[in-house]
Length: 576
Image (cartoon, rainbow, N blue to C red; front, side, top):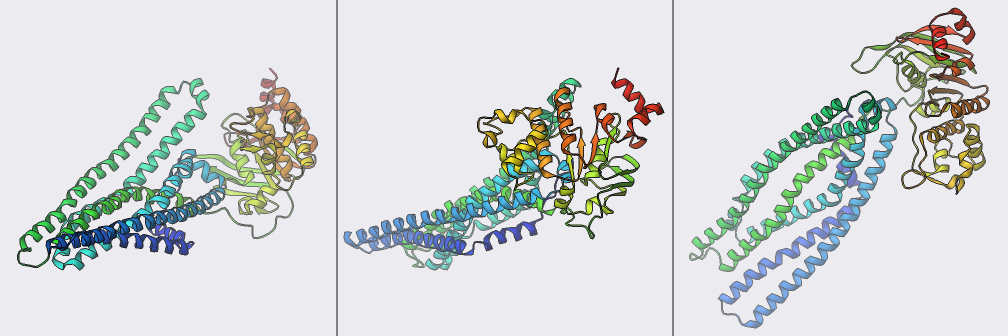
């Protein structure tokens, strides 16, 4: 599998600034509220210090009561402002995450099919679920906390310096160890969390593919091999998570030890110079309280830095989807006609040998061409080249004189449609599923399309086209889902259809009925059918026999049977 790309730090930084820039007003409100909350919080230690000094000077109870009442008011104001700051921050975060999800969906839908297939289901599934969710948590929860904690710390240390510069310098003694361990951690954390994300994606892909192919695994006796493969992927996840745990095992103990140093330094300095009158007892108490108060935002800041690293790594993976080069956005000239021509086409999958060797083939408008051959001959690969999903390594595949892969994807799908054995029923109504192929289709057109492919079960649905399909609703079996895919094909109305064993999931009787219904509907269209039932080849205008990635025979059914070659042997074998 070839994983999708990952964005670099510059791209992540640019995208983060873009999210902020799109909602400047909300960000400004959040910053103002958080700053106001931090300023309100500064008053409490200072007022406590005033109480100490006033009591030392012999003040009466009324003075202490007034100062205590002021402390209560400051705490109340801070609580209210903090609440609204968090509320505004969460609203900003939710809007930013919603935009990010929409952007991710748009970028995912623009991915070339070949890129998605080569990347595997695990990588894309992990990015669309785990990584997007992690980014959402970071934007919604982590960023507001980091901003608020940073503002609080700046104001708290500024207040200590205002009390006395010597106390301010003493308050900074724990900073070198915190900065040093944070730099050490940040240099290693991003790569470690990216590796953890990649390992999780591979494990997800291993579990998904094993579950999807469970019957094949059992039939071929591959259980031990798949268990071994899955165990190896689990081992990789465990190793990457141990690596990130090792980083945290150094980072957090050093941070915790650094918290006590500035408080001890302020108290020692205050006790040593208090008698000399450098500062009052109230100033020393206020400085110690400021430092004690600084532990909570500093702890939140450092705790969430770890989550922030996860968020940055996940954001880089989410943005990486947009780094995949888009499909060509249009041909330099309009196709002239509908003739499909393959000339000298060679093709190899990544890091593999050629599976097609110099294919030359011409498909005439309105012709029905069947492609047959043994498993592994390259039939499905040739179908993908004809549909423009993959480009040949050498040679050309063109429609109307234009390379198929140079056509705008929407234009290509309008002209050429590929239907394979794989099909999907989307959550939603039957109407929603059909409208994917033709958004403007009327209900009568949808019913006609269903009838055209022999769908008789739709007339028995309790709510007709409004019947909900998918998990928690009506679940279609494999045959019904494939018929639904063929009905979409009828609605899409392309001039060329490529059917890659499109009726393989249907029983022979239903498949024959569906093929006959399609034959009536698709009259006059170009049809290329990858056939595993040779009755499809019998009904075709011409038959191409593919062997070892080469066209071994080409002609009508009768001509090839009379020739006594590979096709004749397949026909005799199929008829017993």
